[in-house]
Length: 126
Image (cartoon, rainbow, N blue to C red):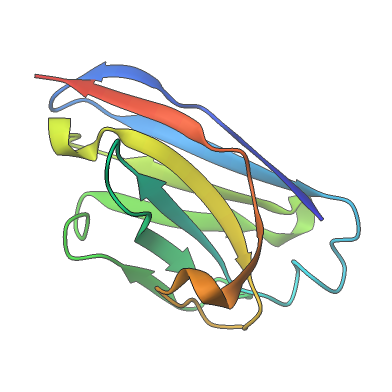
């Protein structure tokens, strides 16, 4: 399965962006029944979990740093996930990656993920 992230860009602090991730290829057994998540990696830092959503969209999980500001959603019919980011802050600046988990529920550990997109850069200016 291939993942293509898009929608990143430059925004001022307090602004909003929505990033998207499209899955293609053999998605029937590897995407539709699996959790998907967003991670991010800032320069010089480790990749960190941002938000995840269960295979059916019924369960979502967020890191403490984005809880209440970001919303993850998915469209199973289109094999898409989205991350709506509101009240962005300079510390949110990072390359944002989407990933497919090997599990039905989202996990915050990268080892649980089997496929990764190429990332989309989000830059927040102060």
